[in-house]
Image 1 (cartoon, rainbow, N blue to C red):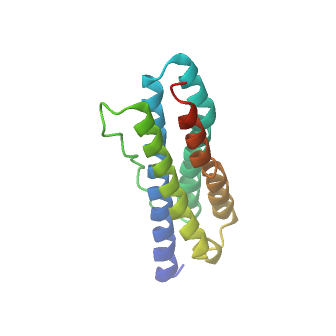
Image 2: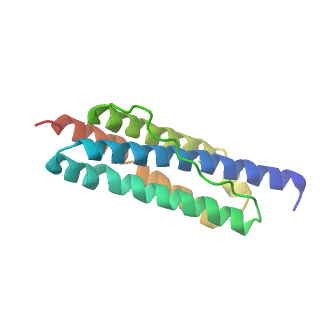
Length: 152
């Protein structure tokens, strides 16, 4: 493999890692909000947001690891950002989670638009990115719907 191709793959791997970390941050924010909610609201949050974000995070991690293994690249450990607002309200945490998920989706969208995943010739990577983006596509809408009914 040429040096340039290896660099391109490493750059692609790093972009996937950053997106996975943003999704991990979204997951941590949803979990923090869950802990502050009453049982009924927490159950709705779990159903509407936790499951798609958790699914996206798991798929992003598998995509990252699998791509690294298939191309003999060094995959750095993923380190999702942890929520920093200790006394935040559930509303703020959910909003921040949706923002983090949107950031990850934007990164993956830009990556796909760059055609780099096609150029490296890795169908599993392309499928993984598409699945992650599909899971993230519902997060903002579901977060908005959840927040409209929060406290009612």
